[in-house]
Length: 110
Length: 112
Image (cartoon, rainbow over the protein chains, first blue to last red):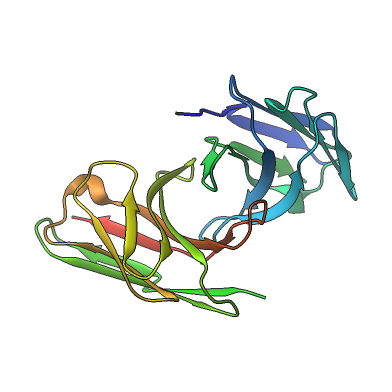
């Protein structure tokens, strides 16, 4: 069974601060996805990274896939209250199933 | 684009009662379909997945079952609910090796 560990589990910061959340595994994934989930809703895809070492930027969000394709990070610059939510990483292994981490619950205080 | 409908949005059921949650998908054909359970707003546990009509794979032994009577319909059932079945149930679909999962808005089940 492939496991994904996300850290930190909880993060509470002030508006304008920067933050990084991590997603680590001992397994290699063919691709890794980041989702954001708001209370009472299903997760929504933010990005998919496929190539080891790949960096993708989505406005103030920067995603990186590790060279060995075992880990990933999400960096948010100048966080805003609208960034509040549960951030989930999910890795796709040799089959089509996604393995999800337990998530990082981010709260950005105004 | 794909749209996933789940109902009901919330459900309160007594222990020992049956359960039927329905998920339907629009905007695609022959999708892979999934049922996930999420506890306390945390990670997603895969319960069942299906690659076609009548084809169901179970990920964990449990009190639940799933069926796919039509291409775009996925049903989660139980004959007798347990307290531990409480949670947020999400239906999802995707097509293609690296395509993302599209989720419904979930059903919040409380077993009392």
